[in-house]
Image (tube, rainbow over all chains, first blue to last red; front, side, top):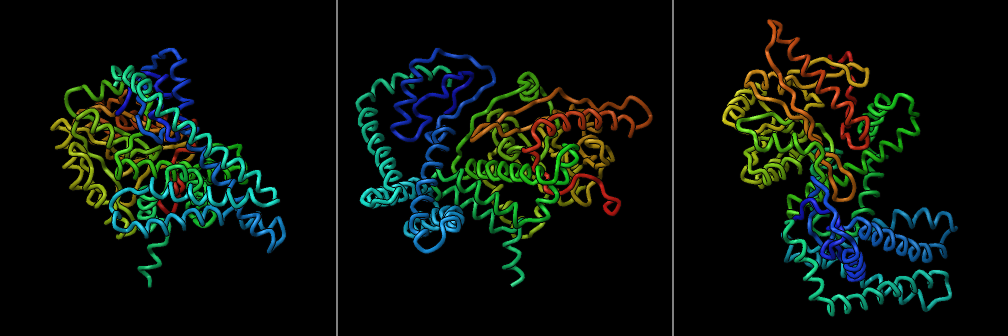
Length: 177
Length: 303
């Protein structure tokens, strides 16, 4: 689905992926006045928000680098641990996805990016729980990650409760499709 | 062994298959990490591509330094990674990005006018995705011309992918310029749109000498000769990546190639000068989107 000539449709909750981002988008979208912008075509897809996408990518990458670094600094000097952790994290994320995809070989012709996303997030939850039980500085990284997960879970409940209002907001843009 | 090694070179099939796999399997939020990582790796490892981009940047930005152009080249590679992924995502999952039309009156003129026309574009943004979307949304039959891939396996792979194009879009690979010219003339006369890239010449294709950013360069002669023969206008159209899953479609005023004198070449040169001026303006503003991995400057050896 696409919405034409409406700049305020950028904040439509359906253009966001996480419950927390959807809730923020819902609040902003309701507060905004309709803004006409000729020649603009906005796609309705849950992964359309650049801000959300970059935020999740940077947060996940930096948290993973921190966990990698904490493991490596016991084996090598700090600066070299950081130099190894930066590319190794990117490669590990890719390797893990290969591993999960190998496990879901039966659906090879379909997209199972969402399934792999859930698996990576579960690993992040596990690592974050492990981190907060230590005295290392990565406990703050772990704490921040768990806080984000908790906030998203609360937002998911709120989004469910506000379901009819979300639907009404979406319907108000239907004329512009 | 040689065949295996060929798969790993920059234009090998492995990378195309890799992007296709990543689009289907990697979580969407890993895109920025992967685009940054792989574009940096390609920048470091692929010397000829890096050299070509840096040489072009030196011509576009005469005051620039080599070190500065190295980082600018990374920006070109990074943008290429994103646009390539967006094209594959559209092909595989039909995910459409956001669009902002600039020069919408020219775009509407193009999509509503009776009869054929030529769309002249450059290796910028996702021209592939733009052609797919334009033909799907406007409902107009379109023929897109592509240069064949150098690597046979990559060429085979690309041809297989293009079989999945929309019904109104057909993709022709420019393998027999003589035969293709006649096919295109028929297509335009039947009222179809023909999309051609007018910023780079591949071997065996007729070219016109011109200057780009003050340096001698060559551009394809075909679109201008076709426009003159079929008496149809040329619509310069540029697809520019404006951000993550966000593109600008810039349509410029049509160029009319008319036979006004006995000197056919002089008439064509007028149209070429207009096209080159538009091309220079767009590249100057969006140098990080120009995916020309070979130097555009005409060398004596190539001549």
